[in-house]
Image 1 (cartoon, one colour):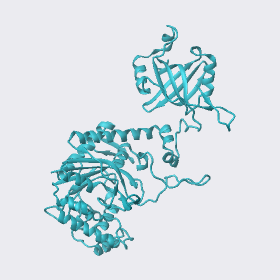
Image 2: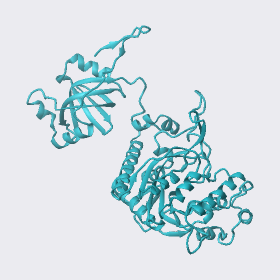
Image 3: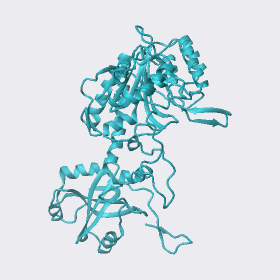
Image 4: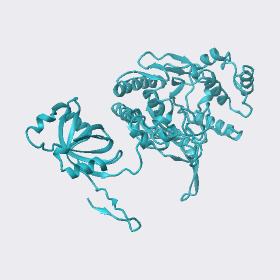
Length: 510
């Protein structure tokens, strides 16, 4: 193996090989060794064992035990034990490997399968090749990475040292793969829509903005793909979906991140009740397929997704929790007075939107009490300007949310496809923005024009992937299921690290 020497250094520097061909992953070889491995004594009695497999991985354990060495390798598929027998190798090579290999190094091993006296499937090494040296110490092999800030900033160490973290991200990948299969099998077409948008629309949120130098225009990172996906349906694709990132410039807490992954789908000729049936079927099937159960443990509670999900009326739930009847209290000033009188909130002076007040009231009083999976239905019409009003009671929407453990994981509704009403409702949003509510939607003239060309009746749905994964894996915060969450700037050397990864906690962010 060639070494190179820096002109400024007196000691040789290790030069890793460009590739190392393997015969299988560690999991594949482990399965073969488990099924067909023989005791080492039996193999050795037939003469020097011939290699059967070539594997590679990172050294997670390396210990010398007299005339033999035992190590544990890890690759993307899992872990496997390897061993070196001094009598089966050149003594000088054996001594060099015993002293020279450290935790964290990558090595390649060519060897034969056998079963130890304790029943451990093992690969007995005939040759060992050092593929790369680790220049920094590995996490403690027993404790792993326990510092929360380090886990988030150096996720590669977290994945190496904490099997439960590694498992969460495997579950995340498998859940997303299952969702794609499920939708594809039902005739949905996966599409992509712009991340940079000329108007912030599709949700009530404060956007991130940027400037496009070549076009000399300001754009917004999308807060939702909704209006573009509806354009696709108007173009003739009846069922579409997208799994992608959304960006909302708002507060951080355990269930909110400014950059998050969302599944959205739209189905022509469906209404919100069709989506209620579909999303329950999807969630139950995904949990069964990926976790093996429809029940999950989260924050000390067993959440039973397999049971019936109760249907809860939004205004009734608010009235029962607060005594405020939203069917009667219909204006901003009266609602402010009712909220203040009950001591629910005292920071409402700048709130100009009735919908924003209703949303705050619900989140402060009702949402925390919704633990087991449920459908929350018929939200006040002021909450979502893109949703269709109910035919029997136009003061509410044909809409639902799935709420679990106080987290909203799904929002869906029958879509408003009347261009005249849609333009009026977006103009109301513009007036609220001009009055100071910077979380209202912007006007999209092109979207209105697309509607004027005709949109079929449809229902759309959004499912928060990060929240779903967190619930499925028992993760207490979304940072635990996002590989590289955005954090505050790291504390300076010698400074005090922030255990939670930084960021203000704003409980009412949506």
